[in-house]
Image 1: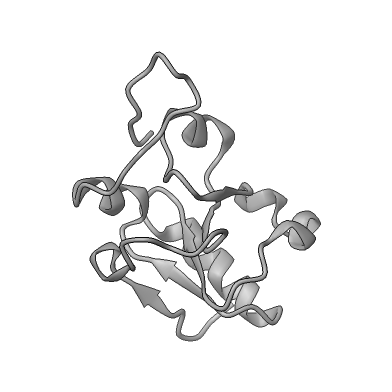
Image 2: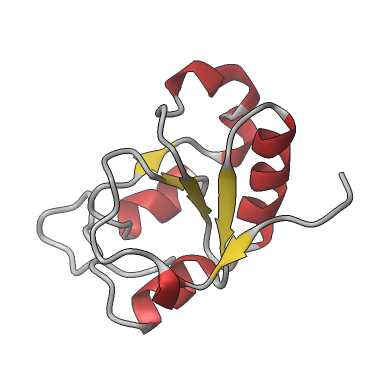
Length: 113
């Protein structure tokens, strides 16, 4: 898919995102290691089968580790009727500016895998 994919830098995201507004498309291991507290997790390869699980929000922000996968998912979702925006630099950018991370393992320090 070609064309412009809307993007936003992590620094430009609202401090508090509406519930369901952040879609994390990384793999299960990446999600478990560390993710944004209120993100919705649907791995990239599961998106087509799980479209009905994508929250109905005015603006959907799509994130992965560095921005590549989320850019493809953003293009796909926008072509399918969503208003999606790719988060530049992904979770690497998110964590580098000090945005919160949580881990699925309560005994582990969350990190971006």
